[in-house]
Amino acid sequence: MPSEQVLLKPRLAPMIWLTETAAPVCVEISDGLRRTLFRRMSSLISGSLVGLIIIAILLYRNPIPAFFAWAAVDTILVLFRFAVIGRLMRILRDPSLRRPRDTLVVDAFIAGSVLWCAQIGVGAFLCMSLGDPVLAVFGTMLSTGIVGAMCARNPGSPRMVKLQMVLIIVPYAAGAAMGPEPWL
Image 1 (tube, rainbow, N blue to C red):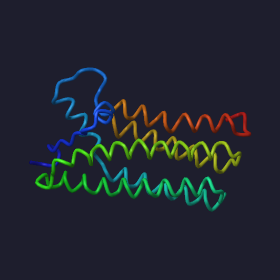
Image 2: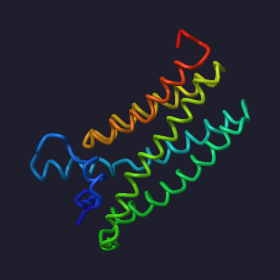
Image 3: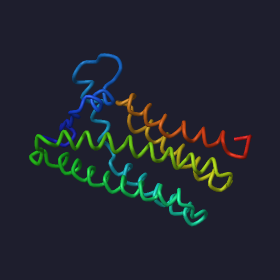
């Protein structure tokens, strides 16, 4: 079976709900939309690496404990996501490696993506609320870059993308509102 024909479905109800469309659609369309979650894993890897680089720059510029905590959480989530992505890529390349518990790997992939966005939102809040214009630029670049990429990458999971966007943009906007620059 070619890799694009392999369908990995989540098992847990919240993850199923996040990856379904709001309107009822036929199974073939629903399955095709769900497959978009697993396209271009390289974009997830490069996005994670860019996030780590930006956090390193922020730590160099402003080594406060909150940034160190953010760096630690981000690193843990990135390593977790890389492990999950590695397993998913092996399954997609060779469907004979697929095991019944692999649905939990799909759930972990979805949960890891949502948690990663939440911690990016916290970081964006920090960048925007500290009043440093350089940090604000980096917080804006990171937030808008990730949100734009998610919208382009996950058209088949609008609920998940909306949740991820809220988890990034709401803290970003709150940080901007709380920061010392009223024009933001």
